[in-house]
Length: 179
Image 1 (cartoon, rainbow, N blue to C red):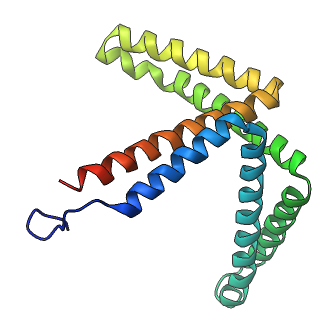
Image 2 (image 1 turned 180 degrees about the vertical axis):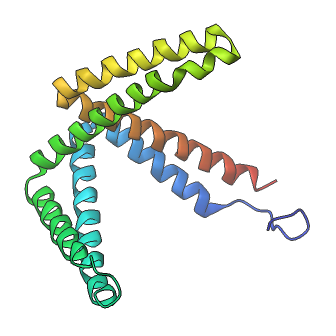
């Protein structure tokens, strides 16, 4: 672990450069959301294909010890097919990711509404605030489901802000380590 005795101080160029890269990527994604969505679809496609290959390669290891190992073959083929569809039909991939993002908002908001009753023990204001924000999230989720492009651009907007925050943090850490 790091402690004051064994930690070498100095400007952390790796942290700084990764921070700058995240900031540049965030600015680019803010300016070109369609490119960001396309990048996300390609990334999801490659992950699905890699996951499918891993599942298929695991079949030979598990077929003698796991009766349901055929499910690895099914899952692997499905992952590869979905990955290839996303890779060669970015529009469908973007639409699918948008719907999944909207459904995630709706499910999360619904669970929040169902489980918010316990907040009354901490005061009615917390319960009311939770209900208000969960209803807002539910409305946003339904709007995104009705307008999947809103979901896509909301997702890209959030990812862009995440990249910006991580980038700024990395630059701050790099500077802080020099002293």
